[in-house]
Length: 114
Image (tube, rainbow, N blue to C red):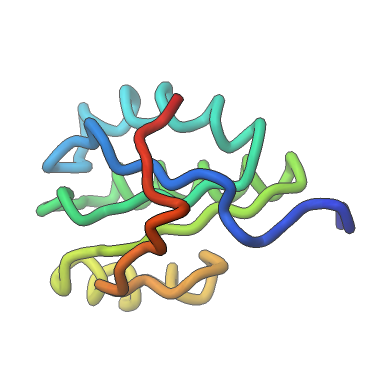
């Protein structure tokens, strides 16, 4: 494990996420977020996501795996209660390093992707 990497996200991605992270929407999501997780620790604000399916869950797992391989963390935050319950049900609350909840993101971390 890279001892220089921080588990505190350097960047929170909140802008321009799809309302539905479902088959057909997962690849554009991956194309946008994957380069960021390869460069730094990232948290994705899921507050605008209202629906997620197996393809969306697979995309989150892919981002987590790639971030870890690059020595970074990947978390999600601000998931709607329904989305948070589903992610807990499939065990992603244990896989992702941060809590999956409606907890607000600290203002210093909030911002759109560069």
